[in-house]
Every structure is written in structure tokens, then in C-alpha cells.
Amino acid sequence: MELPVVRMRNRRSVPLADVPVLPVTETGVVLETAVATGWRIVSLFGLPEGADELRLIAVLGHDAAGQLAALSTLVGRRYPALTTRCRQAARFECEIAEQCGATPEGHPRLQPLRRHSPDHAPSRWSQAPSDAASYRFARITGGEVHEVGVGPVHAGIIEPGHFRMQAHGEEVLALDIMLGYQHRGVERLLESLDRARAIYVGESIAGDSVIAHASAYCGALEALARSHKSGRAQTIRGIALELERLANHIGDLGAMSGDVAYQPAAAYFGRMRGECLNLLMTISGNRYGRGLIRPGGVGFDIDEALAQEIERRVRHLETELRQVADLFFGTASVQSRLEGVGIVSRDACLERGFVGPVARACGVARDVRHDHPYGVFRYVQVPVATAWAGDVYSRALVRRLEIQRSIEFVAEQVRAIPKGDLRAPCDGLVPGELVVALEEGWRGEVVHVALTDDGGRIRRHKVVDPSFHNWPALAAAMPGNQISDFPLCNKSFNLSYAGHDL
Image (tube, rainbow, N blue to C red; front, side, top):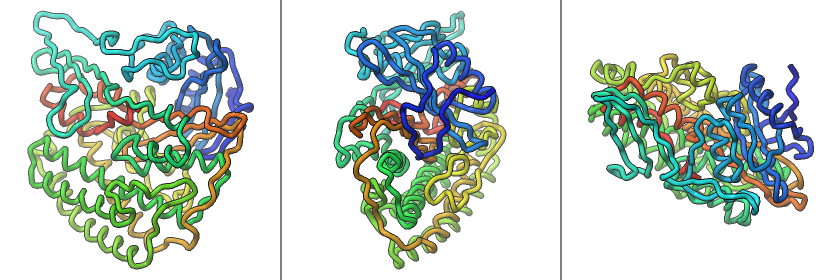
């Protein structure tokens, strides 16, 4: 079946007028057919069309073919839920109800996501409830069933989120996750602020994914402005992205070491995470890379002396990491705590559209750098790291493999940075267009969708952090495990609260 969609590529804009508008009932059938034939929902959001209509725009991705596609439908205040046909639409429709005030009738579990009133709703529409009182937690009854609540205030420096487990003895039967405490109105800010200020918002969406979100944000603007970055700028962006991946993957292995009380590895991984952050600081003056990614290119250069220093330090890091990783993965007591805990199945991943290391750990080789290449990744391939069991051990193993490959990438690319300008002009935006910018952050696929109005201004800016897709994976992984496994399982996902809450 030929899908009624407009075909797209990563960071290649198309006229919004080319996006087909289907009846809402046909849209559900198209989404169901698309997912069954290898597509998945990358983004689904509302675009107000006057005071009485809302246009739902769905962006689809086919990873094997390296293609993107878009379709849309017009709805009113109430419409038949797309989720009844396509489960991947479930959380997106909750978000649409919350942001735009449109109710998907028949939705199996319509829940608030972010504890705020609709900010894109047509003015005459009523506001959908969006608070803790309207959140319907799962309840399992029984004489020996009890309930355990965790958060939103947690020990240590961690963002707020509430987890509620139904348990029989120590066995978890169900886990509910309520987020939204970190909502800042990111999308509205990206739509309303001038570009010089909006970039600061873009790189602050998730504090540990500065490079990924800033690159996706700039990628969308650059496509709409027909701005062409130099090879030098693209390579520096790629190096920074992989340093960000290194810092966070190494930090995650250290955190998992701490959760299984294996302190030697926890201490060494923690120190080595700092080495990667220090490299980002050496390049940009900030340990998280703030100020490095800017529309049209980069704000800082890597000269020959700095390139040699980066190569020397990552090669030294490689030697140290190998020793500690061999110790961590080769210790029987560590293996016994990681294997078989928090399993996410391949079928669940394909059905619900999980991304990043979560997907790759259960055998789904989904990686934007490989499937929808952009920038330097069009010319330099990073092998996709996968495992098959879908448990905590597999998620840790995928991180180890990606650490090795990111080190190789950084060491090779700093020796081969091409000549060129650091920034290209990135001025006026083409009016009436739609662009999708994908970036493979360390947690997975970062998505920025931007639409311009007839005057070339940003009309809608939609952000999808990988945590939006993957928080349900944590909820699916916990049943059947012990309550005491929750910190370890949660850490093996290490999802973002702020990135989800926007």
C-alpha cells in the first residue's frame, strides 16, 4: 500500500502545503498500516488552525529506508483517538489533549503528562485537567498487595518525579510514573523568543544533552534558512556530540556500579566521566558544551595543538577504561545483579517505539547517525552497538561498546578536521515550510520539528526528547522484579525529567 504522505529527509524542509490532510478516521488506518510495515511515529503534535480547528501533524520514520514522512488531519474539540489503531500514538495524544485541549475519545488511558494548562489550545476551547488530582494510578487489590511510593523528592541531586509501585511482598506487580514537575514552557519560548535568545533555551532543554538538543535546534533553523555549514563546523559538532556521549555513558556505568555496591568501578568511572567533561570545557569553556553549537556552525575552534591534546587524552582514557570495564563486566557478583533484571522485549520496543540504548539493548538497531545520517556522519560511519537480552546487563553492555566506538571516532576526527569557516550565514527563514531535525543524543533520538508562517517566523516548534519515548519502557520493565531492583533498573535507563517535561 502506498502511504498518502509527503516524503522527507532529515534536515530537509518541505512546503507545509505539500503535507496531505486526511480524514481523522483514515489517519488512524494509515498510522496502523505504516507501523505494521516498518514505520514508527517520530512526532505527533497539534497546530491550531483558527479558533475552531486543530491540525494534527504526524511525522513518521522508516529507519531501514532512511526516510521520513509527514501527514496530517483536522480535528475539533473531540475526535476518535488514533491510539485505538496505533499504540505508539498513546502518549502523543495525552500531550495533545494537555497542550491543545482536544480530547481523543476512546483513548485507553488519557493521563496528564506535565501538570500545566493547555498553551496551544484555540481560545474558545475548554482547558483539559492537568494536575496530580486527575492522574489515575493503577490499583491492584488483594489482601497482601501493598503500595510503595518514591518521590517526587529524592535523595541526592536528582530531578523530581513520582514513582508508585503495586507490590506483592517484594515483587513489583505494576509501576506508575507521574512526571511534569519540571515543566518550563520550552516549546512556547522557542516559538516566541528571538533567535539569539532561543538558542540558550534550546541548549537548556536537558542539562546533560546540551550538544544534542542545540545541534537539533540549529539543524532545523539551518534547513529553513538554507544555511550550509562548513565541513570544519560539522566535524567539530560531531566530536562534541561524541564527547557528550562518552561523559554520560561512563557516568552511567559508574552509577550502576554504585547501585550494586561495587565501589572500585564506581569511583574510577566517576573520575573518568570528569575527564570527558573537562575536554568539552577545554574546547568551549563550559563542561557541558554550552556556547559551542550556534546557528550556522560552531562558536569555538579546535586548532592543531588542541587536536593533539584531545587525541592524547582520549587515548589515555581508552587504556584506563578498558581496565575498569573489564573488572566491572568480569566480576561474577556484578553479573548476577545485572543479568535478567528489568527486561524490555524486542516486541515491546517495536510496538511502542522505544529509542536509543534501550532499543539497541533488545536487538533493535535504531540509531539516527546510521539510519538518518547528517553532518559529519554522512561521511564517517559509527557502527551500531546492539545486544539482545533487553536487561540491565544489555543496556550496560551497549554503553560499553558505544564508549569504545566514540573514543575511536573522536581520536580519528581530531586528526582530520577539514579547513573551513566556523560559521556560515543563517538569517531569514523560508516561509510556509516544515522541517524535521533528528540527532542521536546519548539517550537516543532527539527530535526538533519546526514550521514557519507566511512571514518566515517560527509558527510551531515541537521537541521530542528520547525520554518521552522511553519512560514507558521503565514502567514496562519493572513488573516481576524486586522493589530493591528499582534504583538499579531506573539507573540503567537514566532518563531525563526536564527533557520529558519541557
